[in-house]
Figure 1 (tube, rainbow, N blue to C red):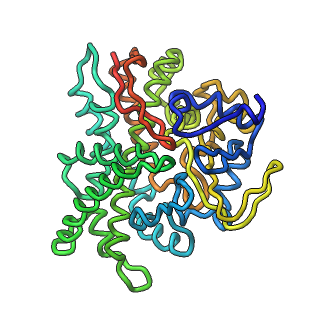
Figure 2: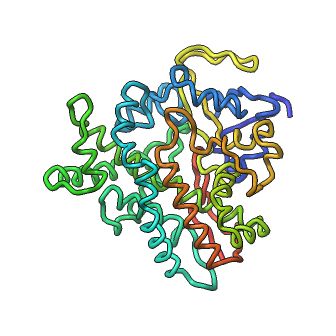
Length: 392
């Protein structure tokens, strides 16, 4: 396909349904592609995406991480967030919260997550049709992150509604209203909890944030609310969609599913391959701080660059026969969680939840099928997953 014929927008319904054919066209024919629909340059090859992720001095996060129309500043629409910051402030803020996500602390959650998984699966029918997202993939990570933050589990449906609305906003078309309303609802919800934790501290992440200091100063109310929104939304959306995508991929590859059922020790490597093969986060944006010349294109300072993680993970130069799903591949270099200073803080937690959930599902339901004709995709450019998914 020639460059003149090639078009790409992350919000195109065809791309949302199956982005991988157009990703291959981008890698082969336009590895540095200007998308008028997204008002962004698009990087699709593994080496380019990886290089951008590890060069925050050139590819800045401070102006937002999603493509937006010219003149729109995401930082003016949302409160300050870790994911939308650069060093040195990013370094300070990440240090504050990283102690909650150390390998030791995440490993200590295993028994708790196992109990949650078993409880949720006890509530779904052993036979018949049920919705995988609303009954399992959505509640599990929502409960885990709610428990970590110290907010009531019974509010998880509200969290799910707000976060799903937020991630389905289409900033490229200026459709901010529903997303901003959802963010405002989350901010209002957490404002009262932050006040309560100041008055009555507990052993939870929200109390730790309230009490944290940077250079002798507590975080501002805006920074605290930004943290809460990021931890809640990112803390469960990525895992919900990892589980949903994995469930579909394994339904489409029964021999791999049976191997995993018989050999649970293969699951950690299989989770990495599932992340690579159908990444829950397909890409995020950065803003250039200087001109970058790449593949014959001059990308100017101030331009937005969309890094396609989903395409990078399907690049044959990084992963031979990349369109083939192989649970024995062990793709350590996959970039589903990003790379560099913005590497996903909750990656270890998402991996743990996925491993425990898939092992339990395989033990109880060795054979399953999905109804893709009735499945509803999330209408989100950067996030790939399902709003509903019937299984039987």
